[in-house]
Each structure stands twice: as structure tokens, then as C-alpha cells.
Length: 208
Ligand SMILES: [Zn+2]
Image (cartoon, rainbow, N blue to C red):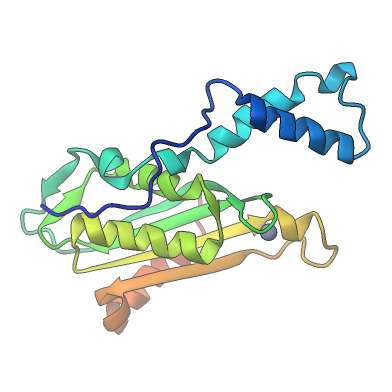
């Protein structure tokens, strides 16, 4: 079995369990530059909280796909139809503004020899979404990871997300949703497979 490395940094200096003093000091300085009194009661512990929270929100840097998927790979046993997990909740931070973007990911693949435990796909999304991201790269990285781990006949990923950097800063873009897709293997080469996947991905779910 070949599972290639991704770009995880498990040796990262900061942790989300304890606030890094240097990081907290920088947040305190940000508060001052914003014109705040960093010593007023409501803000006293804010630098520590922000340091821990940002470390947590970017904990994907400490994770690797192979660790997350672990032993949850199984023989496909002749199953060669599309497997699809829809509406995977997703929260990330845009790397341009460090503001959240959030939405849903839909992942489909056609097994070759292996299938993966279904609960692992949302965890795989977390590995890449909990980093500073752009939505296009996030979509590609998830598709590449599925391809690497499962070597499927094809894989497709669609992400639909709202970006707070657009919604909070502009006035005209408050309801615009950004949709990105990454298609590989038969999902790119075979029109029927692609259409089936995109139709499944874009059908509004009755649950939401
Ligand atoms: Zn942004």
C-alpha cells in the first residue's frame, strides 16, 4: 500500500492546549494598535484565548491524511459504483484575510480495489480545512488525498462556501456562495460519471 506524505508539520511550535506567550503578546499588540485598552477587564485574557483558538483552528497543520485514515481501508469486493458522502460541514480560514469561510463539501469516488470507512471522509476534509486556505486549493487537496489513499477509478469533490471576508467587508456580496470542484480519473474523463456526480452534489438536500 502506498500512501504518500502530505505537508503536515507535526513539530509546529504552538499548541492549542496552552497559549504560546509570544503569540499572545502579538495579539495583545494587535489590540493596542486597534486602539483598545488591552488591560480592560473584558480583554485581559483575550490574547491567550485568541492564541489558543487560532492554534486550534489551524490544527490541520499537525495532521496527516495517513494518520487520520489509519486502518479504515477495506477491500472493495467488486463494488464499482459511486460512493458519495454529501453535506460534510466545513469551516476554514481564508489565507488572504484570516477570516472564516464555511459551507459544505461533497465527496464522491468510484472504488477500484479499496473503499474507506465513510466517517473518515469528513476527517480527511478537516486535515485540509483546518489550515489557512483558499477554497480552490482546499478542493484540490481533498481530491488528491482521496486519490492517493484509495487509488480509485475516479474522484470528485465539490465545495460550496460562504466567505466572511466577502460578506462582512462588502455590501453587495452578502449572499454569494462560492462553488469549486475538482474532478479526477473517470470523473473528469467520463461525461456520464461526471454528470451523475455533479447532479448528486448540486441537488439541494432536504435535511437543510
Ligand atoms: Zn479572504
